[in-house]
Image (cartoon, rainbow, N blue to C red; front, side, top):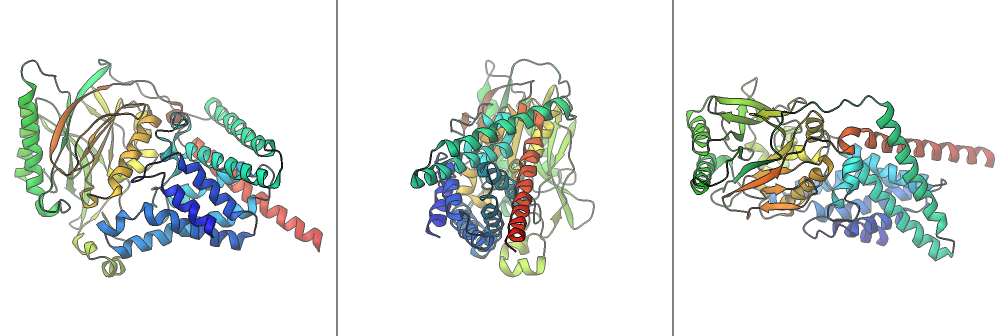
Length: 504
């Protein structure tokens, strides 16, 4: 149990606010050492304790921003997934080449908890920690899911080395399965590239190798967390910052190709609200460029809404992207009667949002954009599928004002940096009041605005046309790891059944 607690805290240190990514394999290694081969029941308990030690500090921002009860409930739920992981790990640890099986199983559980329940929580995945590490390139090769398997494999090698040294066995016994795992995974991915039906990226309009984008950040009055109560002031502030920035361009300034406002730039539907519509059209006029702004749009019924990014030009609203992955208990409320007892904030969510469907990239003039709204960026499919269809630049619009002053904003920024490497695209982030800026295709930070106050900046970004191997492979690295994880559990179960039969 002590090893489980230390391992969970060590893994938490890989994420903001501590941001020591090299600790990730050590924390995973401690988990595999703690679970060992004591049996599924013991492994489940150990995994649950590890989950508490990991998710407790990693998701602490929920306690301050939502409610302590919400934080406790989510930590317990996610720790339950680690209990499942611990039970499975205890079984597959008895197999030959166990580092391969446990790394695949870890990735399988990450995928499960990123989907269940209510769309899951893809926070705290190992692949995100690869930013600023020697193995960051793996994000461009096998994506976030494949990188999670790779980091878990390193952690298994750490655990195996400790066990080998302690038992005075040759370390080659540990390194061999790691090498075999890398080779097998590489072969499977090559087969996927060669034989699986991967659609090529659509042709994109030709344009210069760089584009100038204005990134605008708002400022929420008062404590800075209640956007709905101050939505008019937020829209006005965004317009003022756009106008101020446009005045500084001057005759010799850069020609801006796109202006990006954050998610919830208008908390009312600009199609029905003249004030919001006028502000957006004025922003287009003063900047002499299209404006991509986030808006809450009326849904198909009176009690529903859509969260959209809308491209505005002098002709009015154009292309739209509708948020696909909504935040449960934030943008819609499952189990509403119970949720209202846990958090008073839920009462303020009067309309449930409706998720969008997978959409092609936005075409704004001759620029093709991959768009994601806030929570979308944590999921593998949204930006990747748009880049596979020819998007040249990725834009993330977010309204995480309620998390102001917490580690959530830095964690989401880390996610955006990982996506930049995975996609091989520059990523623009426009936030309500932090963190806004621009990220290069290699994950490095080009520019970043100060948090908690309004501001704007113009960045020159590269326009890319090719695709990374991770984009071309799409979901196959994850599917490969999932298949190996299931195969490992089945093999361990078959072996245990055979041993019981022989013993009888």
